[in-house]
Length: 309
Image (cartoon, rainbow, N blue to C red):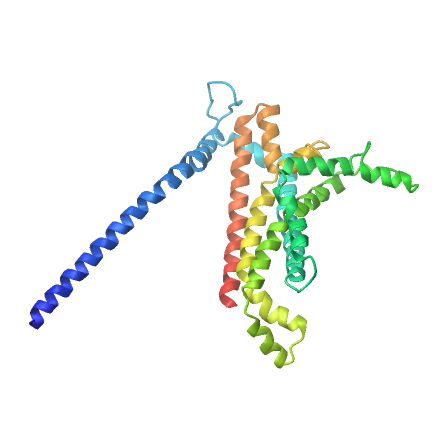
């Protein structure tokens, strides 16, 4: 067979391969389409419609919506309740993220060792995750409640005065952070445990030979190689904490006043109790911006740490 014929056959074979790749790619796009439709219907369209509503004075029920331009945004910036709920939302988001990651990492380090009843311990820690957040909130409500709460019953039994933990604005927000951390620390633990088990033991054996201490091994081996798991946990925890709703409704209802409201519960109150849907949509736009900015900042920061590691 001449060289010219062989070259022609190779060219035909390459063209056939390219055609097959294009067909495979086109078939993949069809597989993406159902998910894309669902995202557009249940996430993108409601979000864009919410932005449109934020420029109106709609009460949430009437058929008419009066266009008010930027009036709702001016009102939001001048409303002291806005900054109170933003502060609470940041506390729930950032506070829960810090505690869930620290405690989850400690649990994972413990369970990565050869200890007895490791599987049972892991199950007990993860168990609260499968409980509804609303149910979890009510469980802890009956612990912290002023009348008939387990905490106050114990205090009275030992001769101390009752405390109104859920009615104290300086305390109830931290109780909400604690309950949210308690419920979801199991997810952080599982992700960290998977990350720890993927690290080769050869690194630690080499470090032992070099005389590295346990802290030095954690700092120079475990932490850098665990950075992808840290990235996942931090981003998930920030998003989950910033949109906290169920636990607040069960524990405090956002009270006293607006002292423990998050942006989610504040929007709920504006829409259903005050029939102020336009202003609720404005608060929703602000909440979306805060979640987007903080989650992207965390993602970019920790992704860079992964690269450095």
